[in-house]
Length: 420
Image 1: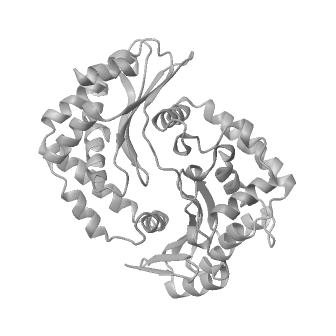
Image 2 (image 1 turned 180 degrees about the horizontal axis):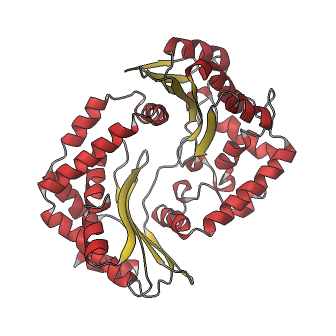
Image 3 (image 1 turned 90 degrees about the vertical axis):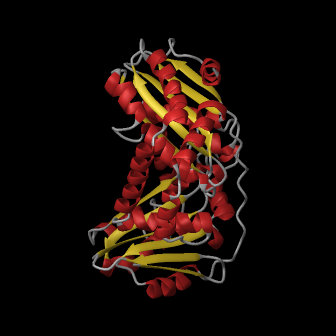
């Protein structure tokens, strides 16, 4: 399998990987603009725009967009994150040109019909309401807000209902004008694809776009803080975030191995101690996520009202213990989990296309799998212990609690336990 990468004169980027033996392909446009790129009065508009892309273009109605892909047995979707918005499809190899035509159409030619705007506004308001009814969704929004308080990176992707209720056709068009230039777009494809054919089509579809620099996102500052809401729920939801490296920092591999060993599976420390040995919860995990210039290691658990305090303090104790006695066997197991998860995921053309786009966004190129595996293998037990020490004692922290949480310690109390 060979990765090929090109760029049009206007800055539009194309990256692809042919996967021999496949009869299908994944193809999409990744736009390097998400919730983080919004001004405060725009919060939620990147996600609204993603919805509107499927509601009609100059050439196709909403139904015709869906039928064009589903008539050939394909699948089309989109998502918005804090740093990208993606529009993608999965089709058989003979329908790659069709998929590219449809995706290019919805990205370049949305008509933003006022009637459809109102319909989709209602859908998004329902989505926001559903999120608030889902405790283990809303708690992560609160945790993000406390981690990056009063910054674009700390705001929700869906946006507040009062802003979503007020967005106009001009607001949507304005965000496109600001952020959907050719230099902010990456065409990524994997599977049964022909790079030269993709290049020719991209030149026709996107080559006429005039270059324009996108607005630079505000630099992130991990602030830390606490959000706590008492509510009569079955479970107390606990989420702790600690500042970690961004994805351009090689320390991200150490952070990911640490979180995997701490709470990434059934053999991890938190799962074994908190769930298996003490029976304090059903769900507990740790994970590390990253952005361009910052990241977070997050620990989440759901437990009963009378056990949330014990769970919180044991979590801190396990973090401190990891700095002292994380074993070579645990580190090796976490490394193996990381590599296996990455390599198994890349058997899917959809996952591979997304990886290509993200790497081009991050680095401007696609590092080889061998380089990535080598960086994972280079992380030593000493590296993980040193990182664990930082997480346990020094790293700025944020805390979110939701449900019957009156018995949970405050962030100040957890900080005192970290320092003890």
